[in-house]
Amino acid sequence: MAKKKSPMLKIILIFFIVEVVLVFLSGNFSKQLEIGFEHGKFRIRHVETEYNLQEKITEEFQIDEYYSQHGKTPEIYGSKKLYNLFKFLSKFGTVPFTPMGTFQLLRMILIVDIVLLLMALFIRKSLARRPAKSQIIFELVYTSLEEFVTETLGKDKVNYTPYIVTLFIFIWVCNMIGMIPIPGFMEPTRNLNVPLGLGFMVVIVVHFTAIKMKGAWKHIQNYINPVKNPLCLLDIVGEASKVVSISFRLFGNILGGAIIILVVSSLVSFVVLPIGLTLFFGVFVGTIQAFVFTMLALTYIGVEIAE
Amino acid sequence: MNLTLAQGIVKASALLGAGLCMGMGALGPGVGEGFVAGKACEGIARSPENASLITRTMLVGQAVSESTGIYSLVIALLLIFST
Image 1: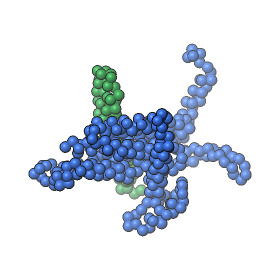
Image 2: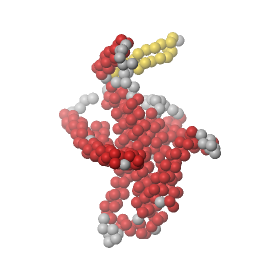
Image 3: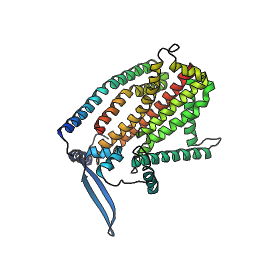
Image 4: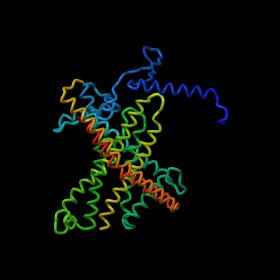
């Protein structure tokens, strides 16, 4: 097959190289194909606008600051009534409240929740003695995570499995949903507030477990009694650093991936579709980070149980 | 965008600091992840029947040792966008 090179292949290769060079030369332009009806006529148009990459990143990742700097009205994807409600509510707060970013984040979390609910209903409906494909996949996920829980916590603590599985599936769906190419879609984990909330929840569950296992007074003595535990002050700092490390890892990975996808795909907008980048930063890194988050939460719980 | 000289100096040094932060912060995780991957290769060569367990542990270990690089990424982003 490789013996005889067709001339067509050469032409395509030359065309490809020329296009790569041209695209890199015109990197500061955003190119769009406009298709639609205008004044009753069908029209295909090729629009080029110049833009600054820094401003593009600001628009994508710090949406409130962008609109307050430029004084434009924000483009709203989704329900306008909900956004107006947020805008109305933002007048009452004492802290300056940012309606657009919060609106987008809450909308994405609601979509993730709806996806999870639909998933649960769908799986529940298709439960059968002879399992279908979807049931096999979900049983695989559940049983493998249950195996991890029994390995780390012991056989009598299997009741932590629902929390761990929910954490994993929620973070995984959050990381995956940013890949759907609809304007306004983003990963909810890209905003720091979501991983920080999940991290606080993990630490609360850890301390709840410790109090349940050892008793409240015995557990609190670990942190305030310098006779029993000479490093009690360091332990308090350690608890805070648990939250920071577990949540900043998830946040930084997802945000860095999103910025790299944006920058590279705006540099080579017509030649290379960012499929490979999306596969790596979306699917691979997203799955690994969701797994790491759940594993670390499990380890923190396991440390308290083992003592 | 009109900047005074002082603002320009602050902005320039923040961008320089972001570049330095990212470059130096990427050194440690690179060395660490390579080390983990090499050790995992040795382990798989010694006992190929445990390959899936070793790969899983390796990925988790790499993701944890990557976190210092991620912190430097977060600090670099803060330097770029908040000055």
